[in-house]
Figure 1 (cartoon, rainbow, N blue to C red):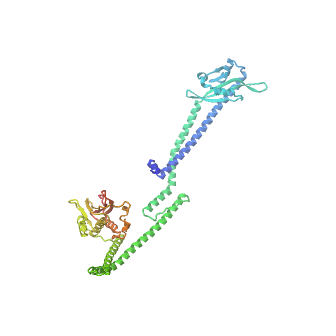
Figure 2 (cartoon, rainbow, N blue to C red):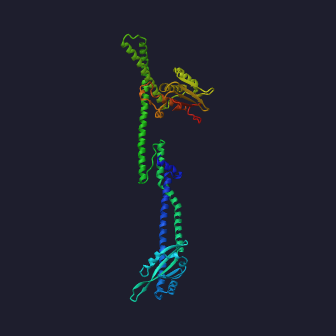
Figure 3 (cartoon, one colour):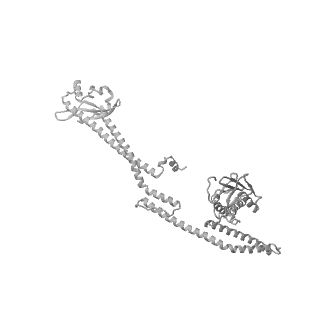
Length: 497
């Protein structure tokens, strides 16, 4: 199973067409682009907001420590650490070795101050430098800022005092602002969707308009309107495609006109030749029959006389075959010219079938079965219907095998005649061409008595009656031809076939 048709079936019906896929892709690209832009903007704004908040708190801590550090004694006592911690504010801690002074969140959560943060602050000797760490306490984000206290010597040099000061800042407000930015970004992306759909619809009308015009042109060409063309607009790929389609249509039209002219010439030639041959063939047939009859009643006295009799017999057979072929070609010519005359009369198909079989001496090979009391009378041309039945039964005897079964079925609108032989049936590759003119399924019988026009003439005669002739293989074996004829004749259609 190919993947393409499977994917097509999995797609919703509305997006299987080119327009649906164009709109879908356009909307996806627009929404994806807007989402990425909004996400990048929100992420950048969130980072800037967080960085600004951290820097602001760190600067405040450094300023507070710088202001109070000169007043603190070293090494600091507990009171000095309390003083230093109080100067920083709530949620703060001052440590010196194992002595510390804490308030707020530092008392409530002993794990707030991590060993990594302490190591970073203790090892930081850069004046005015701070170390930050974000931690979560009871689902609340906190920013812990640590800074070492430096001692300034009389010569201006600064060394770590060993005192560390920490401050914790609640980042809930910052996180709230970031969440608001994220929601705004999502909302912006959502607002893009209807706008993108609207733009996609407008764009599809413009972009796909040439495609629709080409589709209309192709449909008209397929319906037989060979004058259909599309006026190219612009110089883009679709305009080039339009030029190509017009050139293809021009070429197709030229080929079709030439082919139609050749077919018409061929039909006219065949009809003219057949007409011109008819009279001399009639004379030739009469002469050959006389010659054959004359030689037939003579006793051959020598091999030459016997050969002359055989030659006369063969000449009579071939002449009659040639006459039959000419008559068939002239009949086909009348079909093509629409001049085949019809003589409508009320016809009992069962009686006509029996007469057809009896007149040709086929009664031993043909079994006729009709439902009791069935009305099998239709309006038909008896001569042409006799030709249809004779061709079907004769074909069944010659190329199938006897017995040939003919059955009937009647409806209120028509009669169906089915001819089934007892042969091997018709090969599947032959069925589509069984009614083609001059077609012979078996190449070995190209010299057989048939002209290859019998089935075509039967089909044309059925069509003149407004009926239908079909070929198939019977379920039990054998070829099966079915003729359906409307009761009123002509081209009257029926829903009860």
